[in-house]
Image: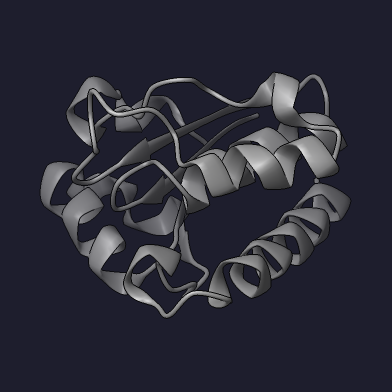
Length: 134
């Protein structure tokens, strides 16, 4: 089973989901990417701090990656954080439609301070549900 998490910048949501699923379900191939990655910037400090508290920091990627770097056909499941991420995925891989799910999780970068932890907790819950279904 190969799973890809997709958000906008690959700095907050998708790398967090990737790291948590690697922790909860070792042995599953998990990756993350952004439709508009913030390279060469590192993954967000708030993501790193959250994963340290979750004892999952060792699974965190260091540098955001972009969608163009991925062969979308090789994944069994693609989790898009928002519908706009799904739209970009479909523009690059129309045949991937049946393996995309949308979690509808907002980007904390665009929200007032204080929302990041709530969003991270929601991602953690969704990842736990996904891990339990695999």
